[in-house]
Image 1 (cartoon, helix red, strand yellow):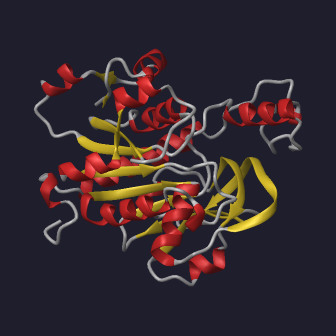
Image 2 (cartoon, one colour):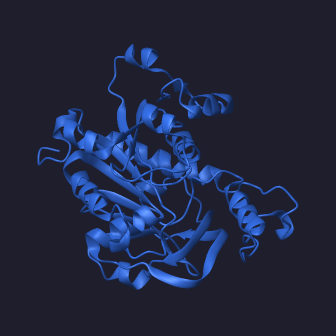
Length: 310
């Protein structure tokens, strides 16, 4: 089954050209099934790039997806055209006022990891969203800073600032290979990483209800399951395009910002060569497994999401 997107959303044409099955509203409405409602709370500056990355992954599953784009209510977006935001995004206040519920919600990262959580301008509203997920979302997926923010809010686990940027493609091992979220995974997989902060494994291990699924001996935990809050937290970037790390590297080089060549990314570590994507298959596996778990466990009646009946 395809992902349901507005036909004038930029991701519609991009994914169509890539062979991802997409459909407009009129076609989707003729199908006599209930699509899964997946929301994307997009905190990244480059909204269009990020929404396309996640739509690509969740649109590759055999289940019809209704994709909803959500933004913070008061936070101003400077890197995306106002017309795009007005046409395709709804503020969280509006979503909450309708009382609607979602089978899944992705909360993206944000380039603010140097700030203490309480200093983030929209932190209070984000905490309201975290609480709201417990009654209005069946499964929440926090990504990078979004995952660190969630695990801090629900469990008090800190993000630790490090003295160098973790930047490149790093091998990770399957710590809990029997997890349904790792169905089809190899014992080791490569994952793009781009961050200045880290979560410590011993703090995760000491917290009841958390299970580490993917980890690196060098970088620490990567994917953590939070059963009590029906959530997954991933601190790295399976969703990245082939050239996302290249864009970051080229940006810093052009600005004169000290930056290392991303580890294990370019052939022979030579930035003059095009990078190779060696994580795409595992990215599709992870997000496909997440969608499948939602499909298997979410109530057919959306009203029951977040209730004891669920």
